[in-house]
Image 1 (tube, rainbow, N blue to C red):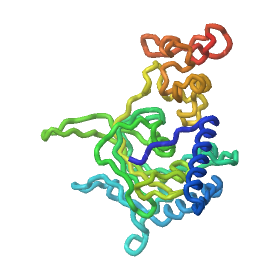
Image 2 (image 1 turned 90 degrees about the vertical axis):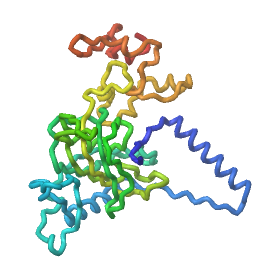
Image 3 (image 1 turned 180 degrees about the vertical axis):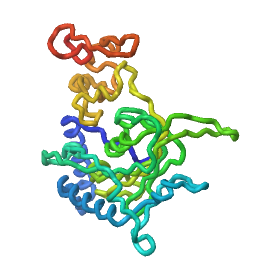
Image 4 (image 1 turned 120 degrees about the horizontal axis):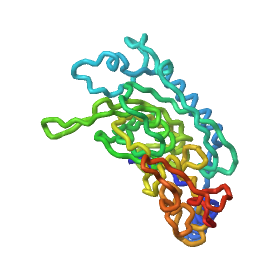
Length: 326
């Protein structure tokens, strides 16, 4: 699986990594003075975004999907999205550009450890080929998904033909955001052969510019290159509403304190974790969000209907579960 997202690093972590990298280079040079190490700086985020977006738009204008089969499914239809070029007998097909929706997502250069301090808007293009009959997950929910990932060339780099639970904060930012635009199914039925299926699942397609995917840090295997655009076909089965991954009483999506759709950059007690060596746990993975020795679950109040209130015992404007001094 190549969908795993990035862990945003603190400045101290980045410094340690750069120091280790420098030592490695020096060691290599001392062993063989003939070795020349060429460090290619990453490209500018805005430049790559513009290039990716133009490439996606061109693809959308020149390709279509089997929408007619989705509109009037034949008896043996497998409800799989098939992409093809508008040409020849398909000259009159409706292009994807007339059928997709868009989502604008700001991306900081810091996400990829770039030197320039900029935020660049990225456009995620998505298509809902079949609307699910249930609700839509958030980027903080666990979702039951089947998927296939490919490049614009059509080369498949990853797929899972059976439903798998995915905790979306662990996956690519663009992938998680795309999933949140689709609805899931509502009913699981058992077949006579012992298998089961989900009725009313959603089927969709999404196009991720590299800034919402791997950018300049692709996986070592699978065929994904630097700055590649990724295309995902997904089948969304079910989701766990208000997923609380760390079981601290607060749904993961509510632990996105800066509301940027990235749960991994909300870490209230990062400075304490750095000094104590506890490791780096963003709030959605941390049962003690302020590292004061009292579990988050014990510093909030949940009523019988599941409503959460956040006491602020010292009245300083910071709720107890985020306030080590309370």
